[in-house]
Amino acid sequence: MLDWGWVVAMLIDSYTPRGASGPAWLRVAPEVRRIVHLAEPHTIYSVGQLMHAAGRLALYADGLGMQPAARLWLTREMIEAFIQGGCPNAAESTRANYRGRLLRLRAVVLGPDLASGSPARLSGSRASRPYSPPERSALWASANAQPTPALRTGTKTLLALGLGCGLDSPEAVLVRAGDVYRPRVGGAVLLHVPGTRERSVVCRYRWEGVLEHAAAALEPGQFLFRPDAASRGKNTVTNFLARTRSQIDVPRLSMGRARASWIIDLVDERIPLTALVAAAGVESLHALSRLMPYFTPVGPDLAEQSLRGHA
Image (cartoon, rainbow, N blue to C red; front, side, top):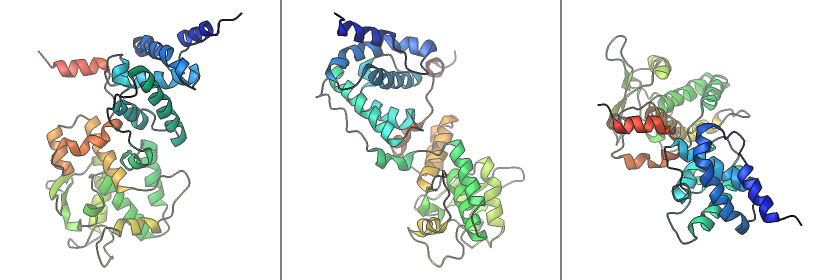
């Protein structure tokens, strides 16, 4: 008679998730297989489903420089970080399936009473998800395809203020044409940000021309965005975007997501944190914690070199 337990054990020990190969998989595979061996009899999931979810989580954690240990991988915080940052192109249903499998693994392997925090709702975290490079290109193309000059200019101005300068909606509506300036020939374009978080921001190079072009078409005292609008309010941006023409497969423009994209670009480019905090108009790094799942993982070799420093 066929020993089903032996078959399951063979499946676990021989299973390699799709795309998992090389040194990273060799580092994490023993621990992945160990926890699936423990959990498989106590779950409704198949070996393939458990190995795939646990393998992807483990490889993501390895990319962050973590040791191959389930006690580190299976915290609620790490599971959420993986779901938000480790599979950005997955459908919401797929992400929910990953969460269910990993939380079940966590309960079996670590125990159900190890409360390390509540998982964030997927729907509530989408506002912080940065735009991917293809999405940014699609947003720019969509801006140029708007049916009227006012819609085209307004949309491109918002993109420059969000992706180029990291402004949110309340800040964007207060900027005037005279707030855009270049102190010296060939130097950077700066933006004076008025309001409660008054500061100067260096515009990202690729958005300098868009910002300067928009400002040059107006008098210095005119508002840069929607100069013809009679009032400035919390709905100024959303009311404008509601009038724009949406296109299939093009994400909606969100100033929150644009600002998140700007911050994540700077962090990934190793901008000094003091400069980032000042430019973002925040008082502490805590304000940036919700973006942690989206920062590009640092490999263990680079992490070790950076943490060790130079002789």
